[in-house]
Picture 1 (cartoon, rainbow, N blue to C red):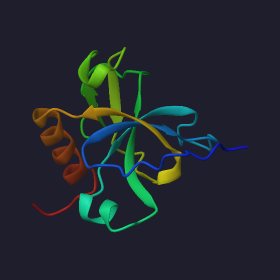
Picture 2: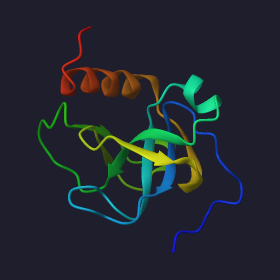
Picture 3: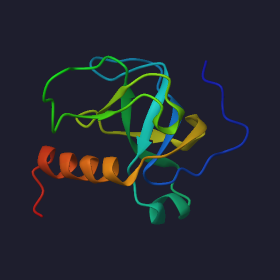
Length: 125
């Protein structure tokens, strides 16, 4: 059974949150884990009930995994371990499953995520 968050969080773009991603299905990560909100704030503030996120994992892939992953060093936004942002695991998740805000991603990492998304989705610049 999923617990509903009594205080609904309005996610902000480029902020990392703990999100309840249960259940795990196929390649989709499960359990509570940090996720990066990538949806523009205009949608979040309009009352949309879900937010597009990129999950993070501590299952690090060493070597060049760009554009599929972007590394966040240990300690950034209070993360206890280095983590990879999973660019290829784009999810839209219900806002009631956002549990806690950890903080905003530093500007240099935001730029790397933007580049990775453009590359991975083959978007025109």
